Length: 315
Image (tube, rainbow, N blue to C red):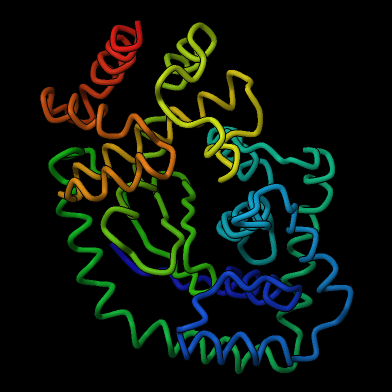
C-alpha cells in the first residue's frame, strides 16, 4: 500500500477552499494556516466561480455532496492534461452516482476540469502552497504507514490472494468525509487519514456493488424494509428519493459499514454509532457475518442470507 499525494487533487481542494468550502478541521493548525493562505492568494473570480458550482446545497451536513466527491475522484483520470472522461463516467455509473442538478449540467461542468487545473497550476502563489501541503503530508506519513499496514492485514483474511491493490490519497481539507476511486485494479481511498475502518469501507464498496442486481430486486419488492432510517438517510445524502435505486444505494451502504466494522475488529460502540447514524441494520448484518464468516468468494451467499432473513424478521 502506498500514499499517493496527488497534485491535481490538491488543486481541486485549493479551488474549493477559495470558493468558500470550509469542511477542514479548524483545530488542525497546519491545515487552517494553509487554508487561510489559499484564501488570500490571488485566485480569479472565474476560477472561484467554476469551483463554486460544486456546491449543490442538497445535503445540509455537506453542501458539496456529491460534486465535491466527484471532483476528487476525477483527478485520478487525468494524466498529462488528458482527461479520460469515458473511464471516469464508467466509474461513476458503477458507483451509482447521481447528480442532483442534472447529469447534462454535470457533464458540461466537469469537462472543464483540465482547463481549471491548468489555471490553478499557473497561479504564482500555488507552488508554495503545494510545497507546504507536501511538507504536512510527509510529516504525517510515518503514522499513516502504520495505519495502512493495519488495514492491509485486516483485509487479508477476507480477500486472500484476491486482495486488490489499495492506496491512500490524502485529502486534508475534508476532515469528516471519505471517498474512493477505482482505476483499473487499484482502489484508492481519499480521506484525511487512512483509518482502518475507513480504508476497509471504501475498498468494500466495489465488492458489495457486484451484487447490486440482487439488492435492487429486493428493493423493488420490499423497499427499504428494516435496513435504515429513511429520514436520516435523506438528511445525510444517501437517499435522494424513495426510488428503488436510492434504496439500493442505502442497503449497499449498510452492508459496507457492517463488514468494515467486523474486519476492522471494532467494538459494539461502532455498531451503535452506525445504527444511531441511521443504518439501523448494521448490528443485524454483523450477526450474520459472524455466523457465516464469508470470504470474498462466498460474499454473494452471505448477502442472500441477510436479505432473506431480513424479510423473516420484518414479517
